Image (cartoon, rainbow, N blue to C red; front, side, top):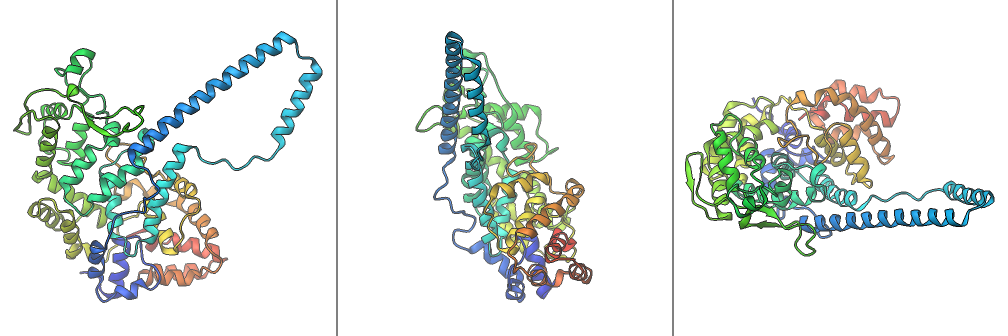
Length: 482
């Protein structure tokens, strides 16, 4: 059984986007599937306003220079302090002078401090976050933006390790390929400097490479292992430790220009002297030593492996439809992936066209990021203080671009259900910040429509204040699930 009419429209906008806005439920009720599919055809879909945002290399160089300048300032301050102490010791400051100096210091401390601006690294991250949240608020349907979020989590990095590149990485490696070929996104992600740094490939070198011999350093297998286990084939898919080691040798030399280089620091470069020379065998196939092309050839073959199609299809179905996705849906996505050579646009179309994607049961618990974005989207509020929004997301256990491990944030209810009660504080604060003319009952109709149960409507109606009514709406089961 599949949903129809207004119910299907409301369900679709929650399941595949960030929820409905205004009169959207009515507007797409005649053809909900067509409306979701149309999102794939919008010009510049998946892009964000990035005119003022630096590239990953520019951001990394800026942070490198900023930290170098801060270190120099700290050293100068310490030097000046020592010189002042030495001078005072030499001339002997009187008790009166000491008291006067202390009074002046206390008077200065009593002055109200100006609001502190984020330091450069944090400001760069907040600028990127604002572009991402704004894209969610402005998304008419939101399906492609949700796909961006899915793939960014699939090929995740962490700002805890490479803060300067977290936002640019998503813009450069994920967004341009979100409706392209999986092989192209795979290559873009694995060769991006952020990924190479995050998974420790920057200084990986073959034992028989020039650098390996001269520096007595060796191989790091992290990138190769995570590509096989997380990004392509999946766990228990038939690869061996020997395959990991061979693939890691293939990827030696994939690194970046040192950040201290002022023009190209932080950009991808292939360094031959780090690369393990010779042929490598990965998953039974032989790859001649072609430098950087050897790695690209392995990635292209991994993208076409049947296990990759199954792994990707399962993750997509789990993310959008159910923690235990229907096997028939997974099979349809897997077959489309194989038949189209990993065309992600056609795989997304297959997801929308499958009847299994339209079951009325809304069993998926929204992750904190999706729930917060849904509130912003449904109320049309662009965050003026993006740091506060990021803080709320972190409080709920999903700090932006900071997954706890290379497998990204989990996509099942068990990982998030215990944190649902903490969402009430976030909902209350969000409700307080909404414009005073925001009507809870109008918001029920625009964001939930036929999905809103009588119980939810009665709960909102019994609220003691408008703010409480809005918070209760945001905490309703229909709002928390998709």
